[in-house]
Image (cartoon, rainbow, N blue to C red; front, top):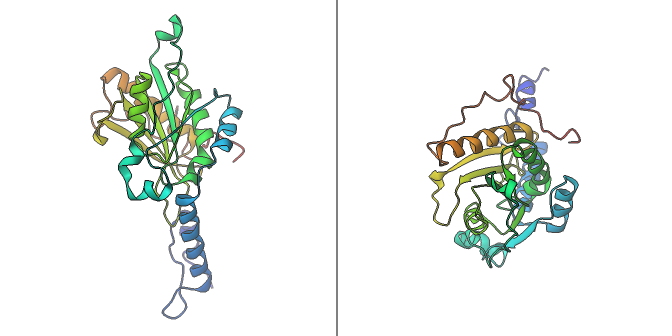
Length: 261
């Protein structure tokens, strides 16, 4: 008998037309759901392998990253007390002043934060940094990556202010769901400083090979970062005016920018 839901299931990660056995789910669907629940829990609770991430970043050609921690001393504390994930436990090392030529370019920093999915950062953090570097290197002086542990988006404000950045992009693991547990989010802030409101940021979400690929995500963030420089601010006043994803001149939705994945 033909399964009328087959084509729809093939087009989405969501559970549609999964069938039933009497009043319950089928055994296969139930086992799949429990596996998804386990992946989501692992994504939240497994610690970020900082050394492995640093090695991945080195393979992209990035400079040695700086590693910082938030005021959350443990994963349990991070989950129970969100504000502690928004503040640095200690300061961030100062860097030598850039040379005269580099001072002419606006400075952009990238923070890779574990957030609520260490799986997302482990899978997509390094290739997304590479895509951003390729997209933005001609317009910005890109500072060495900062890896932030037990961190939330706002930790980028303190880091950006301490380093005197013109703009910061925080790549962070998004809250996992039962369909996707390794989705990466990116938040752009112009002139970051503590106390910045969420309305002063721009977000690009669902970055992963099965969602928004690395190259189109980097193209969107590049358009926003350049637009923020012109406008003098990021957030609700800044719109993505670039061509639609997949349009001529912009990478296709499925272009992960990483042929190996």
